View 1 (tube, rainbow, N blue to C red):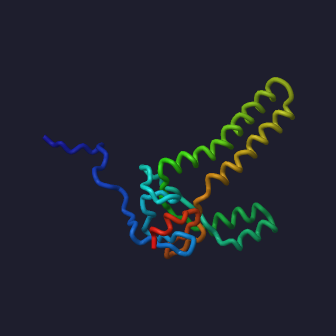
View 2: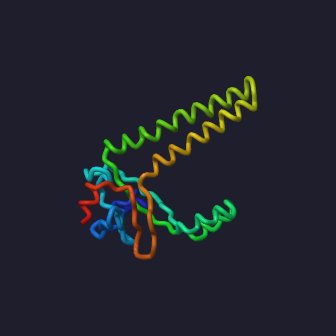
View 3: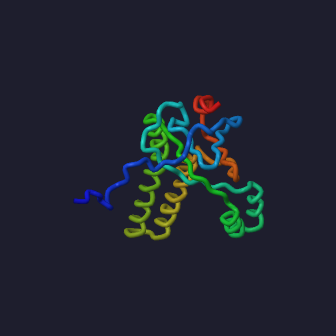
Length: 175
């Protein structure tokens, strides 16, 4: 009898990236193409809480921001065409992951409540004031995005990617 189950999960590791090639580049971490960050917290250098979520980061030349002066739509289209992307897995220990989530929730929960209240105002009383409250709720999402994006790509090219947001204990381990 054949015990091979074609629907079974794979038994081997699916990660093929190496961690030994990462290095410090001033106050940034450089990760060569085909590599990934070590599975340690990028803040305190403790062991990262697993599973580490893989993120896709994008970068384009800062010169493209000059196109905003011409037209925002033109900038958006050109930035989408000329952006570079990389996949990386920045790790956080349990303490720093919880702290990051708390910072995001400081903006996410009030934004959700404002949007919900605005919808309630639109239904019950004044549609125009309800729309204003909903828009304020959407605007409160912007600081949540800024707080959550402390780890970001500084440059991406064919040789690899340079990242900011790693703290000194983690960077010291990369030398």
